[in-house]
Image (tube, rainbow, N blue to C red; front, side):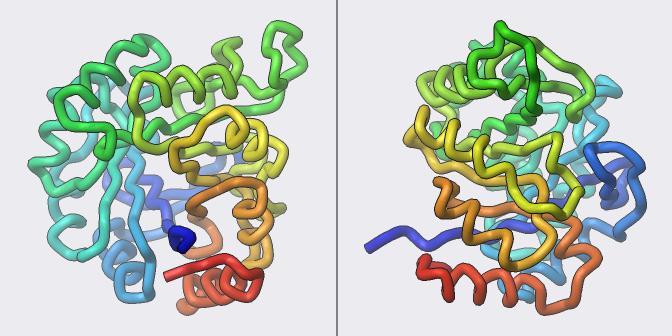
Amino acid sequence: MAVAIRVIPCLDVDAGRVVKGVNFEGLRDAGDPVELAKRYNAAGADEITFLDVTASSAKRETTYDVVAHTAEEIFIPLTVGGGVRAAEDVDRLLRAGADKASINTAAVDRPEVINEITQRFGSQVLVLSLDARRTTNPDVESGFEVTTHGGRTGTGRCAVAWAREAAERGVGEILLNSIDADGTKDGFDLEMIRAVRAAVTVPLIASGGAGAPEHFPPAIAAGADAVLAASIFHFGPDDMIKQVKDAIREAGFPVR
């Protein structure tokens, strides 16, 4: 039996508030993270992803108190990212109530940290957050470049090659976010999903661009095991999670 597709609302948090923009810019307030997490838990979300979107660029730690308060109020898995630089940060997040930790910038800077974290806690606790954008750089074979610091810094590295390396180093999942599609509500970058899916066997979470329930099934058909979104849930009707699950189910994919 196929594994059920997971539907995951994403809370992009800045200074203790959920924010959302387009292409990671023009952020606007979307509410209190604890209250939104409670709402999504009750509405049937399969997991919650909490990303402190300015922790890495501001060189500070994730707001552990907000994580702890969120974890106390929900009964589904909680993934937390932003400012994770070492195994000690993962330890603190797990103690605060997170089920999984997400890493991006620190892993690009020092890939060995993936090995250090997964050897200590197991692959199941670590998610690689891979923010990628299209590029014409001839050195980037796939045409998709890895970015860091919330999509603000290009690296000149191939996103597909990086996904493959991270999987080999032990990450349990890859959260693939299209910087170009982020917040546009025009649909997921299906070409990017297919390219990364062809390179790795670990679960793949598609992110970036969802604007309607019908955008989700094509991402799954392209290879996503889970679908993540923010704007459509924050600013849409209260039953949007149900609408998304209905669309996935109607397309023939198993969903919880």
